[in-house]
Length: 84
Image (cartoon, rainbow, N blue to C red; front, side, top):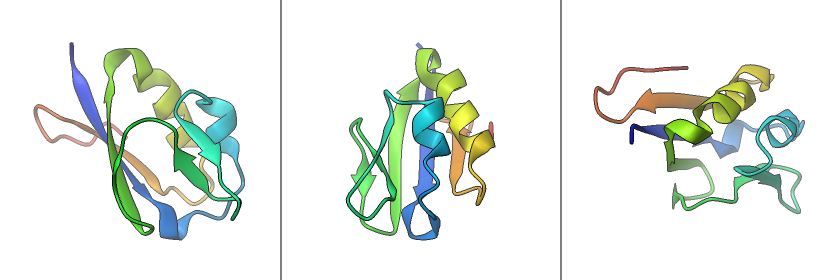
C-alpha cells in the first residue's frame, strides 16, 4: 500500500483546530491548544513527521488545506514529491 510522509511544523501552529475537525483520527489538540499527532510520529516540539497510508491521505490532505498557517506538508514516501 502506498505511503506518505506528513511533516508538521508544530512551532508554527496557532491552535485553530481545523486540522482536528478534518482528520480526527490523526490529530488532537493538547493542553497548549496546539495540534498533536494521535498516530505514531517522530520529532520534537518544533517539527514532527508521521507516515500515513493511502486510506488516510484524503483526510490528512484536507487538514493541510484548511490549516490557516499551512504548517502541514505531505510527501509521497516513494518519490519524495510533495503532494500538498
